[in-house]
Length: 229
Image: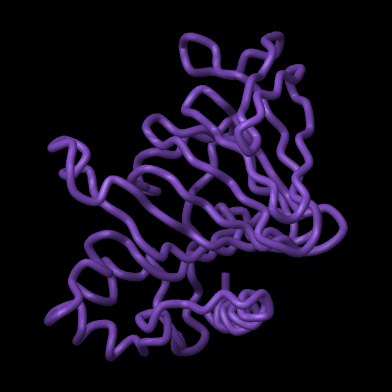
């Protein structure tokens, strides 16, 4: 993805999020220079816990067809998980465009609530994992939707209207997209690690390769290793 395109997506996504009354934390608006200074001084958690902007086309180069906007608001780390105390949770705000696919995947460790925070309908395609972790194309899928137990056939489409949510455990494969327009999505989960905890059905990348055709307005989480170290 070109950096100029990333900058435009950041601007447009911020406006979409604000239209629902959701306000980003202050660190969202730090310039690259301020981000470097602050994470070296009083805010290393932003860098170390991968908080911030995240725009991905999954390495395929077609963001509108396969992609996702994310912003990680808070996140613990694996050291907390090993101790069993401390910040054991994470929160994201995301945007999925109309028919913009987030491809089929599951997680090894993360259980997550996916919440339609507003906009159009959120559609999820669901499969149960086989004992070896692969997709079981014959098994029934069971999920919780706002406390209600739902049983669905393999590959069934679960549609969430604004305000509705689903809990996805590690044995639930899922892909999702917006139907009828863009969707503002909340994610509440245990500790999030996008570098190691995503298992995709197809061999694709989690982060985008950025072509630096202009200067970044704000850094992405995937920029931190290169720009901040």
